[in-house]
Image 1 (cartoon, rainbow, N blue to C red):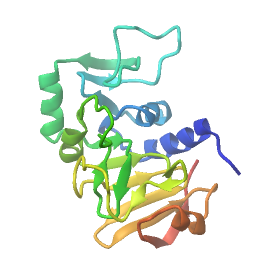
Image 2 (cartoon, rainbow, N blue to C red):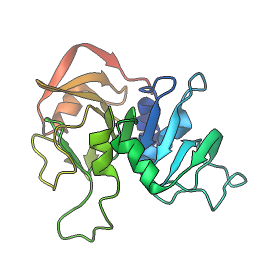
Image 3 (spheres, one colour):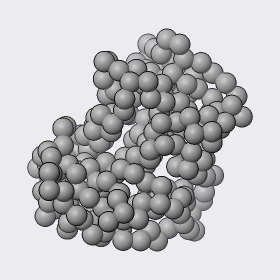
Length: 221
């Protein structure tokens, strides 16, 4: 079954949202990670933080809810949940660098089996800036990568990143439309398998060595 781009993003965002606990402070990176806000269970409260100075973001606004004055770090319009607040960039990065973020969800160009992350530049291409990713991956207690498994058919999960690193040995979990992989001292462990994939498919589309967990579960999508 060939998945649409929209379905792939939905699968990834829904699964990432299952990682949070009641009361967690979570930073969502730009792009696909912002969609995680739409799938956080109503049974828990998660304080969503954005490095441009927001905490307490809600789901993506409808056209009627949208306020052009309220946006996340990527410039996308957002809603603010009851109790949410605004503050300056100095305070925002104090929260991040001070270790007060329980988890950050980021996209990636490349991730490798050592937990290295490359997500901020491609040599020879125009670079708008590194953003807050370098602070987030070091400051957050848990680093979750939410990304498509491949890019134009080429693996994005490698033995060694070839692009300039955002951070070394900081990634904890990788969630793609094919499965959930945990970064361990022994390498990448496949913990969950998507119903739209197979172990053989993941091995074939991943450059890094995959260790299949003895208790491999089916990914909830």
